[in-house]
Image (cartoon, rainbow, N blue to C red; front, side, top):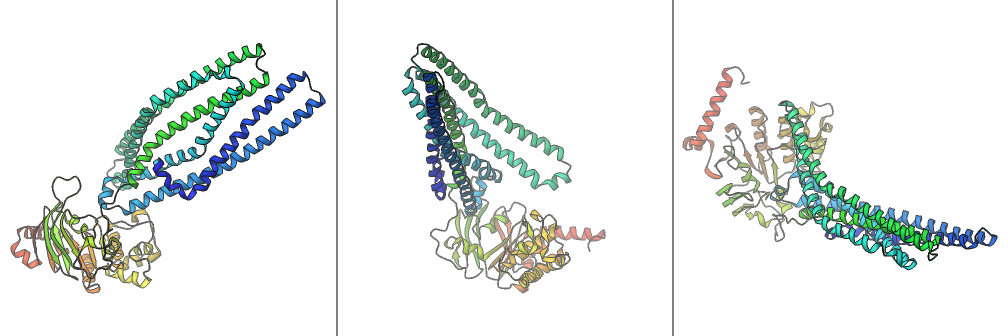
Length: 586
């Protein structure tokens, strides 16, 4: 928890002023019972209401009013400053977490699930933020109130104060026993939140699949199970608080009863004035209530420790890909070379890519083909350092990718991933992710290469058409073409299309490849595909088999010598013939 306080530095002034004002509120509030005791004692001593006593009572009453107004002012300003500091601390902490996530490599992101990161940046930050606000408010107010009230009570009546010698240690013992158990239970509850959020996220993200397969009832049952498990974990964690509260209240009421008995005997023996007792009783209530508040604050602090640890796990996570020692800021050209590259995902027993070596000249169009699971996507993700090689070297422009500043390298490599992602906003805004300063003419030129201009122009608002989140109001093929256009706008040295034309017909696929070859000839183009027709006209084709380079050659060369390529080609040709035979091959 204390490690996170560095994110409150910007709000240090209100964070300091709030507890100072709180102390002022406490001191002024504790003066009021003393004045009230003087009024009662004055009336008791006079045995009536003389003019002199009335004047004195009015003076004391005015003093009480000033104390009350002063206490109210200090409390209100302190509360506002605590709110400013607390909300600012939470906002800064969320920014720090999001900033750290943006620096993560793919392997770091793989370590934390998306649902877990969402829980940490929302639920966990809220827990820590609320604890921080209580720390700068109640963590000062309650102890000061407790100590000052206890000192005044002991000074006014040492006999009555003896009752606290039993009750306060009892409450402390209960706290010491239950706090570590509560911490473990609340940590488990937060972990259950991760699974709960994952269930919600998966359902909402894939709601169309759920509807298509009529699996709503299944998803409701799955949600109910996750919800019930979370409720059970929450109840298990809160049970200690539920059991602890009656125990604390029993001790408190027992203390009050003991004090009343002692006070009654003292008043009967005339060793304690009624006015003094009224003040002492007020202080006793303050002592007990603020002691319980301190217990609650300590319990809240322990509970927030679990959240603080989860936040620190993200903040203190060291990005696996860094460029601290990199010196290169410019990528010369789009040439690529793999030198005995082996890559293994973290925790995997076997390598995904095994001893891969090949060279691609700048400006070439290269196809990569292979069975599902042959590591095609893993291979190309090593080029912009989305992952780092386990062994060997990947060179771009003749330089090891580890020697480039990450920003410079990734600016030179444009990649269209298997999962096409569009964001809320207009088509133009989505395209300008590739180049935020792109002109309208450049947007049109890129979309013409990607064969997207015609369907965009068919929309009433054209390039200003709003896209729903994820681009759900365009088809799969249209989404792919928009993503290709966005990648082209970046004007990269290397363009990687990872199975990015799977949702378009072969004619459109051919038009896109023709546009890429003729309009950006200096850009190295890597096309991962399942269809032979998508890579047949490439300068060279790389065949992957279980993470190994099986063969490299042109379409004609591979047809002559490679059995894998020949089998894929013949099976696809047969499928195409069958399709044409039934009249579907337009």
